[in-house]
Image (tube, rainbow, N blue to C red; front, side, top):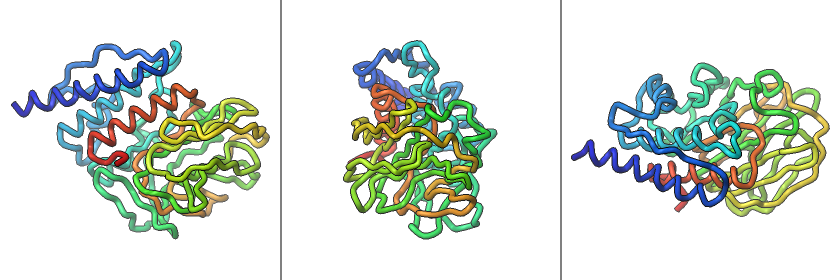
Length: 299
């Protein structure tokens, strides 16, 4: 009976995702694979197999469904959302060591703690910044390591469980002034970003709880989203190019020095190429479904 219950949960989750996403785009979802306690979706299974303390089967099915949905979310015959990600960290998982894994490719860009600072990790919630010194390095340098991200083709995303009162969720600034960074809702009730341009752009955003997205999709178009809703667009011209330095999370890397720390609880964080409105909705649906399934989503 327990085995049957686990299978049913996984299939219901996938069916829910299909129903919600198909309303918004040309996204198509093939028949979900039949899963049991040893047979997860193949892409997720490669991640599961390298975890040091993998979650129980019910939660693993939720994670498998999330990866499956990202990997089969294919707009207009292009690459899936999954294939377009340069890094993806699911901090809302069982074990703090496994939270450091880059899910898009577990062999590269494992998060490190350069300052050897004791971080606040909460199981199935994420990592909470202290607004002072907590940070991690992705080891990912946009200028040299990009597979999908480009000067005019980049998205930063972060799912937070608590409000950020002033700092950056992730980013980098190099010694040539090139920068890529995003701060979800701050004490000023704005979402701010610098997307390969020279000026911080902000949009009104009263809460950072949930999925915040900043995307540059052309030389003169940047857009912010919060939980799938557009917060506005900007015509800031891309003049600087991709920064040469490793992206930090819980702050941003300013020429090798962590600065402007967050105090929010970060659950999911990623970088990929530019997204459309429909893709912002799909990403929100997929990640929110996972967070809700593990009991950590938006109240």
